[in-house]
Image (cartoon, rainbow, N blue to C red; front, side, top):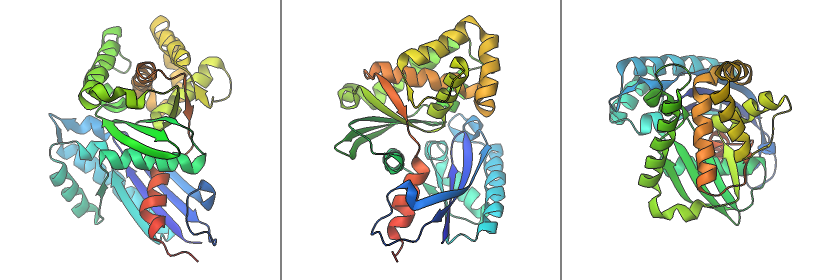
Length: 314
């Protein structure tokens, strides 16, 4: 069974996944059962913090090269039939995107594919659908540098949009220390509202739905934090009231919040609350009763549509 590799160069994490694809007689690979993950290695690179005045810094480029080079060395042990690197908001949105990508590619000896806003949202939908069927609703993906929204109707996605604010960019742009002050937390929400207005404007009704579906690290981090707060198993569904409880804990007992955050998501302590604030604001803005935490995401969508779609079937 052949192996295929994907390196996801994100704003917060750089993750390498190696997938073993099952040989079968189906005409399409569409479900997670068609492949299995044999390695999932994440490095918290925080590249969004290396964007200053809209430019990816030389230090950020060096850091990206170091992390990617390490992943490429690890991938050599798995004899991948194909290995792709794709990047999202952190390189897509910086003003020196073309130059930064060219420098990184030259130093690592490997191409990098930049996903457009629409690509990222669409592939997130494909990945989520690979894990479980999704009914009508809205898909939200809160990444490190952006937040994607996708309308789901009759099993198809449409109106894919990317809002230029994520959990790590919120931290980098609005928080001085590790956890935000009350004023900084309000600033994060206000900034998200402004970007939402710029991006969606009068088309907000397209995304209004009682049912949201969530992919990405920020949504999963919120679920992990909720499990610590309630001392229970990680929930599959999060309500706006659940997020209220997380935010209230932060406001009323910062020390308790910090200790639980370290247990829940030690590598996301600084981005956990910004992600929860964005998610809570989005659910309330679009009238959602809850968000279902999905198992798949952009990487699985990329594997299905960009790699396996062109693989000859047995």
